[in-house]
Length: 395
Image (cartoon, rainbow, N blue to C red; front, side, top):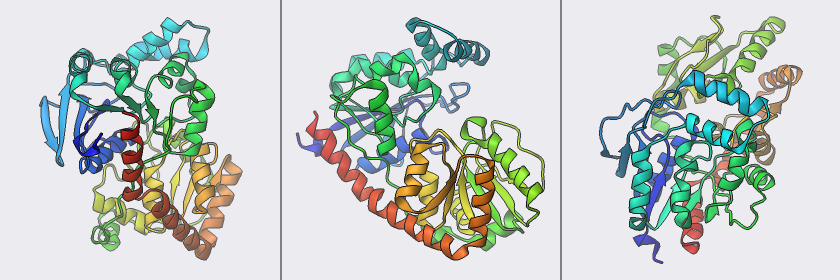
């Protein structure tokens, strides 16, 4: 089939320019780049926040950066206390398959209008691409169109992936599109789905526009007087931030040096009130790249990642990175690229920070290595080619 004529639906729980989740950004970048080749429609909910699933978007239809969006209301907001009780049972006690289904329904988002649209209009699209494995839009939506469905799982080694319900999910689609070798290996191990074709693809990383980088302006705006290491992303325990704060405070107590920890993103947990920990909130693209350009190195403390876009953006600016070595994906990327270091406990955290700070020459070499790695594996030209090769051959 001529891929120019393909009608592709990308199904994702949330979608928008100001939505910070990794899978949601993954979906938006895919839609905006693949629209050059296919007629893309994004099918999503009216929710902005994955914690509540509140219907915040008002329009049923809109166009964002040339991509058509269809939004459907979520049936009800997430009941956090009830969800936490079910999660405690699922992850801490013996339970049945039906309990996992109940967990998924409470995980959400459940949108009956969205599911009805998929059932009624599956003949209108040639292919459905679902992101991510974890949410109800995929678990209950993909089976409705599985003869045309591909899954971008954005999966990582976390408790939910070992639930029995996901073994079935990973066997349903026509193809799996993971981001790394480690992600595919994890899925194969859990689901035993070697009969399902897979292509390691990932996401393209946008080359920062040099005009967006103005560190002196940002330094003055945010009053950044000291050298700093940088964390960008959701500030929550699930992203390793609790441990990061604990380790950084311990590091500063044992190493009284002039160094700050700068944070950007949405805070879902308390941030220690210290002069050397600076929380900047959401930042613009110009501010993001300027902050990366000015940092000593970027840190990603998360143990649960399928692919880290921010460390690759740091590499494109020739910055070394430090990552949580308990995350096989991040460790693998640093090892293959030779663009960063990793730690698995406090002693290694302390040693790696001190080594990076005292070896500026080697740090620059790591940054250059990282840039070469991203350009060789994650340029949009390469990613687009992989999608064009994989999707049409399976229709």
